Image (cartoon, rainbow, N blue to C red; front, side, top):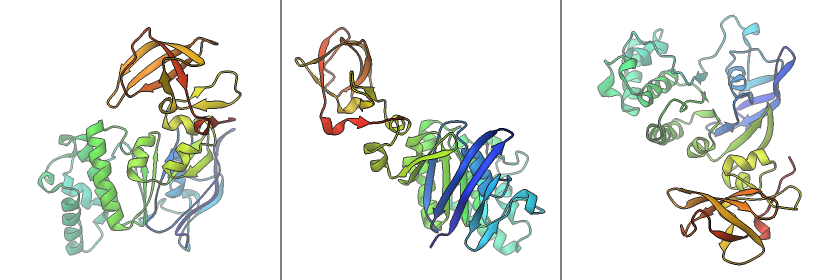
Length: 319
């Protein structure tokens, strides 16, 4: 049964449409990532979903309760739906413990105390309870922001680029911890990001948004092996246009390097990466430049090389 639903939601700013009739149905406890570049309508989507922004059309529902927009409700927003921003929005003059307790000021004192203690423990923040947010790392501050949002035990958690300010090590650790906590709590989660790798570390259910429109939805395998557009394909890796073949592409990892064959090129650049060398190869016929993986680390700049690929790995992408 659908638990959280956006039904043909759109948003227009003056003459520009940021969101085109967006629809999404989520079951209770489901996590989904919405991936798109800057300006694709991701933040507008979350603010409408939280009841913090007026939509131009459409409806938002949580169970059998319609989520009203600010123009329909005296105080915008809902305790049942919490939006977490990328800039934390913590009070810098109060302690970590006080920040987490802030949404619980009107609750029973004993419940407030036990709830804050549980969140401090779950997020590994017990020893930082008396510190101010500015004295914590970015990852720790994001933990506090998420713990604060979870204080009132919301039904839905909306995450707006929550890891964009974190370095790679902090980000990977926080995503792993957050995934476990959210699965344990049964919270329904919508996570928006421009980074596909971040999305896939949190959930395998991904929706691709481009210029306010849904272009594809699926799991990582479906999206990688069967992308519907060049935009979706490029989220996973670069793609190389095959000469003299309209809208036919091949990924760098699907190209095999040989010393003889038909498609000739010369290595013009080489980069050492963790699992392979990444080569830039200029094709002799037409002068196109391909990016190709060299897992054997065999080829050097200036080498002559022939490129091969299997037809079943060719991507036909028309937009």
